[in-house]
Amino acid sequence: MIVGRASREKTRPSLFWLLAMIVVPIVGWLARIEIRGAHHLPRDGAYVMAPNHHSEIDPLTVAVATWKIGRAPRFMAKESLFRVPVLGSALKATGMVPVTRGKSGAAQSMEQASELVRGARGVIVYPEGTLTRDPDLWPMRGKSGAVRLALAGDIPLIPVAHWGEQQFMPRYGKLKPFPPRRRVTVLIGEPVDLSDLSGRAHEASALSEATTRLMDEISRLLGELRDEAPPKERWDPVRRGQNETGRM
Figure 1 (cartoon, rainbow, N blue to C red):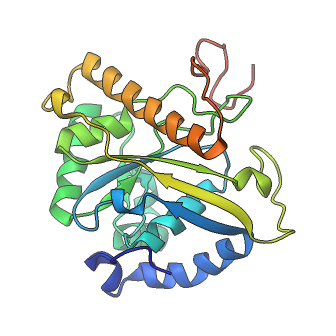
Figure 2: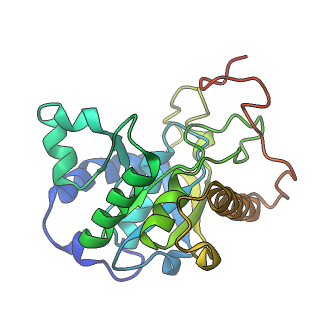
Figure 3: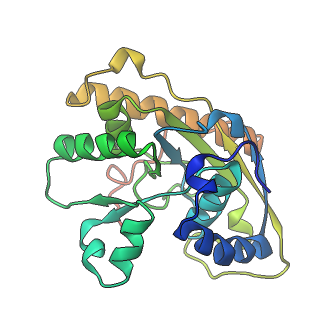
């Protein structure tokens, strides 16, 4: 099912068609995905989609939702993976966005943004950088990657919240395939207004302000899905003394 008009990148034959034939039925067994706010995702042109991240499987549900809306789901990938035989060719063929460790963030974001604009492509970037450490699965403190990319190319920054994957794939837990078709809701918000920060992708204060706006909106959207008020203070793994694996 397509929620709205499909873009040219989806209607044109590509490797995504083959991937969709495999992934969509698998995800469809696990989840009955309901999409809200699909009209906020641009049908054409570049965009940066920024979802919350509370389950190891949610990249698949977000990707399927993006495909159903009518856009091809693309993610960031380590540059080294592009040199792996077969895998590298697949990543290039599907337009995944390479990330080079050690390269200047500003310079890299400008290159990535320019490529997205030239190719009229979107990319999915998890602003938290990893699974949330918040005990109640609320979004934790965000990083600047998504907003840096959006500001560098003046690209729409689309906040997304999703909820329900924890029913069959709890954070750090095992997959529970039965019962099938648990409800997952994906809520796409209006683009975050960064107009007053335009041209300031190199300024730390602008990146901090843009990241705060983005995480506030993702939290608000998730609160709408959960029918709960998000916490006033976001979980900060650095202040809590946790490392990237979430262990003390």
